[in-house]
Image (tube, rainbow, N blue to C red; front, side, top):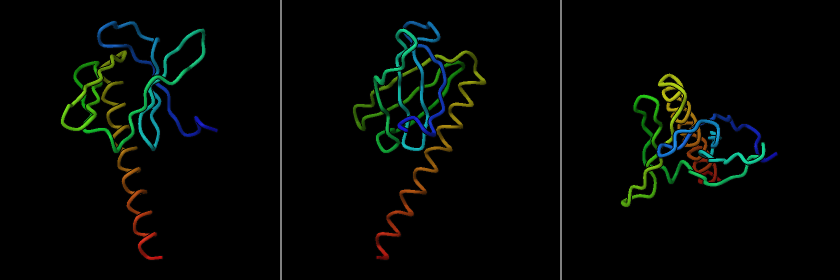
Length: 112
């Protein structure tokens, strides 16, 4: 089940703020960006936690910064500032979970 544990949220592009064309899937490994076409989700981009430098919000906007020194930014528009803040908190919790699980795996493999 490839989408098990993924929480989906509709967003829009910052440049073209039409809600519903894009869906963010947030999970323990990162964020998956889906595009909706004819009621079918297709993956367009993956943002793994280890490749994500920062996540921030500003009003209704959620911004992901990836890629190290180049600092490529990806911004998405949500329906409200509360949703943007909720997504930021959810991403933070998922990132923390991912870090803790990765640390446990490292510790477990070092013991063996």
